[in-house]
Image (cartoon, rainbow, N blue to C red):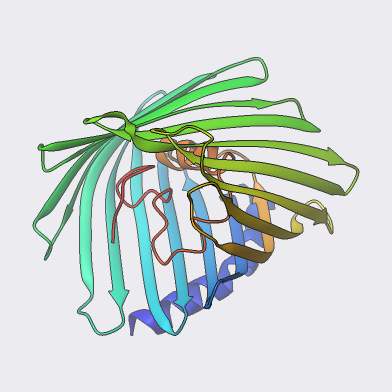
Length: 302
C-alpha cells in the first residue's frame, strides 16, 4: 500500500504544483535521476510539495530509490501552525519501507523561526521500532550574496554530528563549501566544495569531495553540465571520479528536474538545500542520502 501511495504522490507532484498561481502551493519539485557507478545502477524518483493556507503549513516528500534491484521507499511530511510572527510549530511524520524489512515509522516535533535574513529550527524525532531519538538544530544567516549555515544533531543524547557551510550566489556565478564532522574531532569527517557558472540556458558545475584527515590528498572530483529547458525544467549530466587513495571508481549521472516556487516552508529544508549545493553526485548515487533531512542535514540515517 505504501509503495502505491508513494508512486501516486510523486507522479502527481507536477500536477499539484500547477496550483501555485492560486497562492496555496508555495513550492513544488519533481526529480528523476539515474546513476551508474562501477557495477551498480541507481534510479531515484522524488517529489516535494509545500502547501500553505491561512496560518497552516504542510510539507510532503515522496521518494523511491532502486539501488541495483534493491528498493527503498520513503514518505515524509510535516504539519505546522504559525504560533507568532515568524514562528511556526509543527509535527513530523515519516514512513520508511525497505525490501525484505518491515515498514518503519518516525514522528516528532519541531519549531522554527524565519526572518528576513535569518532562520533557525529545533527538531525532535524518534523512530517507533528502532529505539532511536535525535535532536537537531539548524540555522542560516544571509548577508548580501553570501549565506552561512549549519546543523547539529544529537543521537540518543550520546553522540553529536556537526555540519557547517558557506554559499556565495551572485546569480550567474556561485561558490559553495561545507564540512561534516563528529564530536570526535574535525578529522572524523569530510568536506565538499563546488563552483557553478551559468551562461544563458547552459550551466557548468565543478565539485570536490575530500576527507578532513587528509584534505585534498584523496577523494572525488566531478564535472556536470546542465541545460534549462525553461524556467522550471532542467536536464543535467555529470561525471565523477576518485583520486588519490580514494580507490578507483567512476560515476556517471543523468537527471531531469522540475521546480517552481520560492523558498521552502521549513528551515530544515532550506538548510538541507544549501548543503546540497556543494556536494557532488556520489551521495545521491547511494541508497541512503545523508544530506536529506530525515533527522536533519548531515544525519546518517537508514
